[in-house]
Length: 51
Picture 1 (cartoon, one colour):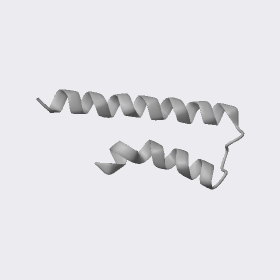
Picture 2: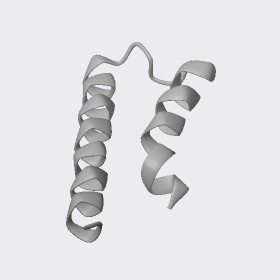
Picture 3: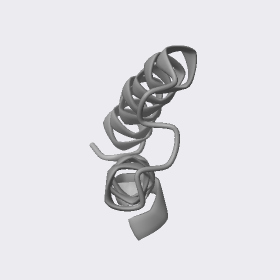
């Protein structure tokens, strides 16, 4: 469950700590979009499963 909550944050932190593809604009934008979509998905799951 922690991966579902913090996976995107870990990917972003790893990218910046290791300086991996931080200057590649399509990759940066796509990673940001994936993180936002992931957060919406997690929020939807919690909203649907929790009363």
